[in-house]
Image (tube, rainbow, N blue to C red):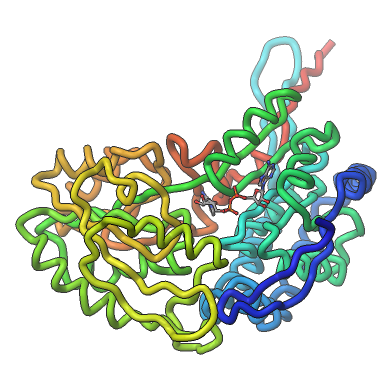
Length: 452
Ligand code: NAD
């Protein structure tokens, strides 16, 4: 296959065809990125900062265009897509402060002076999934470029359009040729080459846990650095003392945003048994009133699934499970599914254990705090989660006890570019975003200078 037909998920219509890079083309672009590295590394810190800020401004100037492209390619709601393009701008601005602040240390030692340096790695390979094409690309390339690396980036086969446009905007902003290269292609061709090509010094992978494991194993061969952001099965834990109206009103957005195709989706709701029926009654109108509309409609809160294949996969999870109630969805072509609430009967069910990556949430009662923690942790994943309670002490205790990288109390915030993001257990390895992210794209070098 040398080209891929991009489909609009809301209408099932063809958008365009994109050429897929071959292995030889990938090698040539990796080699160009490697040749571009020394000059980019040596750009004066203030100048590199200025170029990144200019890139952010150019992204902002094209925010509407990028958002519309994402609506067309990914079926994201217009509101989400605008936020996503804005996130790329904000992340570039945030890491534009890095080049001038990539401090080393002076460490007291006898006999001389000891200094540390954070040196860029060289070429960094960023592999992006289809669920959030723009933000996930930016979380990789912005800190990597800021730290002085050049980047080759592979978008998902299904969703290459915004990444390709971002690479053009980088050039428009004055970032030199070969510094940020987007290579559309198949995972087992282009993505795999990032793992096996010796000039790629780090792989920053976001995607499924299954592929992530193969990336980690492949990187071992060259002791290649890798960061993995993988799947999730996050819990939304609601205690009897919580503001139940608030918990029920926000729960649908915590799982059905992006049609549930979100690694942080709170796809397991745990409710204390004394308020279980009351919570389910409050949740029903919140789910039924969710505005599942054409993603182009500014009022839309949920769009379609990404593909016919994903729609079939998600529907497969509903075989033999008890559906409590569903929301609505538009008629006609496109890969639509209604937001769906199912009642879990056992923690061994697929619906409770596996990442569905669609608009389906399972609800289960618990008796006390200890059982809530045990159930929340009964998963191979550990990405995020929420705790609703009016007892701040309990909020803190339960947050500390849940084995996940990103918890929020009385809210569902998880990915904020100012704070570290990543998973415990099989949800990943390493952290992205936050103040320390650029260091993950450097080697720390120690230099001792004898004083005589
Ligand atoms: P995927 O693993 O199938 O693909 C992810 C990317 O890897 C794609 O670009 C794909 O082409 C590439 N790829 C596939 N096979 C490869 C190989 N052998 N070598 C190198 N690259 C390869 O995942 P997906 O279906 O695109 O995305 C959905 C998954 O991503 C979900 O499991 C979701 O939870 C996860 N995800 C995690 C996060 C996070 O931050 N933790 C964020 C978003 C998505």
